[in-house]
Image (tube, rainbow, N blue to C red):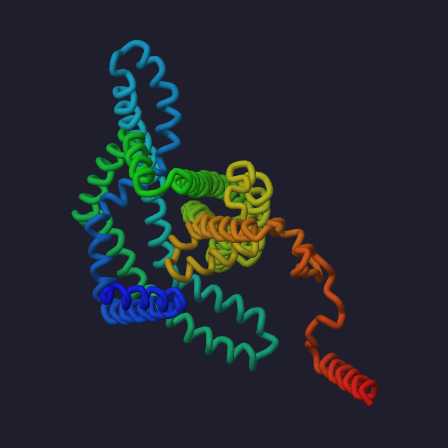
Length: 455
């Protein structure tokens, strides 16, 4: 009895003061979390180096996953046509159809990329080197054109030409000493580096495995999800993954097709302008400009401007009037893309407003560069959808409306009824100095009235 009494007494104390245990547990978690954060900050450079090394080791798998993901629509289209007849005629028709569709899908992808490189790369190299070699001539032409415009203002002309000479000399030095050697090193490195070619080759093999076994991988992932989570939570997780796949797949595939079409239309339009005599630039520059327009068009919202600015400067070197023609042509092309072609291909695959599109591009572009600008919109759309789902779930638990329109206007929820009521004028906090003076005067008047009532 003497042994059990202290235990019973401790239990009664614990039941009387349960918050002591919660405070202690909270303090312990805070201390442990702080120690982990300090440890990570101290070892962050080493962790980042190890992470980069791990990415380098797994680069073939990354290449393979990206290839398989981009080629998945082609695989699905081929599989729908080939699998039914083979399944009816052969015992292992389904397995044979998967292998055959995987091989055909990779062959189609390799042939398309090879044809594009064979058509574009040689002309692109010629255009870039021709542009770099002619940089001095173009800068001199710009100098003469500006001098002819400012010939009636000798002081402005002299100051401008002095600044222009310094600027042009820096540009020429940058092109000759930095840009051209790096371009040559990049091109030769991409072609001759054995490790990159080896990673791409292994990536193709991995993509073949992924395409052939995608159903098995999906089944294994689903099996693992149901083993780790409850049925309801597992279903929500798989629904979220399906949504991510729908957003990313629809946006990236559609954007690539849209950019390819825009690049081809830009090349055709420039060749027509050259053919009608509205432009006198070399035809190889038309391909260079079209590639710039097509590649930058992958970036939503800012892509057309990013591609049009350097292209306009390039044409302005040849002729300012032709640059005006090019700007009008690009504006018409982008209007066609934004109002007709883009909605037809992409639709509203992300569900984001223009403000959040700009926010996602600037945020992820600043962190991850060009890749972040390209995939930032679908990535932010997924995060935005997850946050929206959490907010709506919390509102539903409190019995509140999830419709955004209900929260518009100067209204607030009544704590008693839970309904929206208009905010009274006196309940609004004063903002300007004038409103604060009025509020202070009103408070003094009310105080005087209360004192008079007491007297």
